Length: 184
Image 1 (spheres, helix red, strand yellow):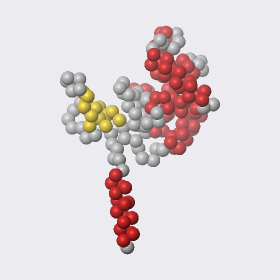
Image 2 (image 1 turned 120 degrees about the vertical axis):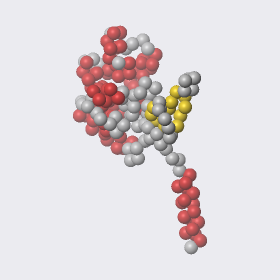
Image 3 (image 1 turned 180 degrees about the horizontal axis):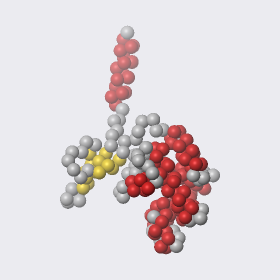
Image 4 (image 1 turned 45 degrees about the vertical axis):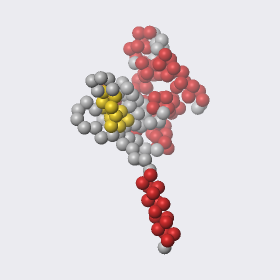
């Protein structure tokens, strides 16, 4: 009986020591200070990190990537590369510009792509992949230009008639292409 209680005590201690995760919100004070909270009160708070949904493991995500990419005629390796560079496979990622989820989809883009819950793994991947497919079509299959447009916007790529001279965009295209080349 003593062994049972010892085991039970160890089990309870392990469960109590597990980290507890939740959404993290951010609010900027008038002096510019950023305040973070997992239980905000009052107005002016914005979602900073979305809690990862339980059960949305990498195997499920990979299956979604593969099925959605094939539906839009894109190599799953390309979509996986975009996700790796955009969010490092973090479903709860939120950019400083408001892009969210695995594919860092802007809420307006999600709506334009017919998505009602961009936090949902499948819907986020559908929105990002559908948008990338449009960009690929617009740039006649040129993956590098489509990637630049995914990062900087198609208007910018069109204005520069190629990858714009922005360090962030050039580095983004370089990183995604390196991932693609390394996973063929």
